[in-house]
Amino acid sequence: MSGAAVGVRVTHRRYVPYSHAHYAGNLVDGAYSLALFGDVATELCIRTDGDEGLFAGYSTVAFHAPVHAGDVLEVTATITRVGTRSRTVDFACHVVCRGTPQVRASAAQVLDPPLLAVSATGTVVVP
Image (tube, rainbow, N blue to C red; front, side):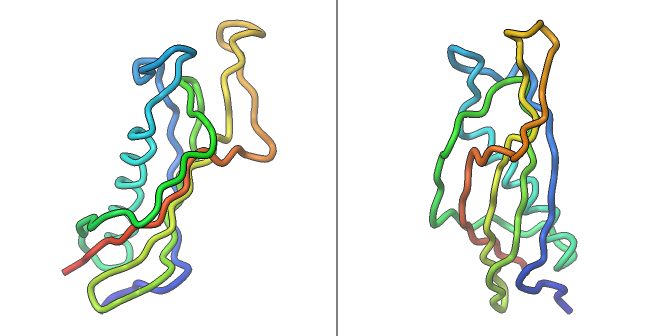
């Protein structure tokens, strides 16, 4: 029996290493956040349906703010609709900490409030 219900949420946190920077200013590409959405969706499916599930696609993706190497990201997946085999999931990627190399090489700060970097809605399918 499925444990999937509207409102079920899973959260991951991840440090963005400098080896993932692709652009000037240590910017990270948007695909980085989308990969994290896939990871958090996998755990969501395992927790609710006992299966890793399959990602069927995104209906919306919006990039709100840049992600930089040295950021700490908080990524959430929340079920917003439950079908027989499909689940609609809202995703959010927030920057919760950001490096401040202008202060000194290893300096960083907690962002309060966190900065919304990417949001999306997608569909996962479970057997």
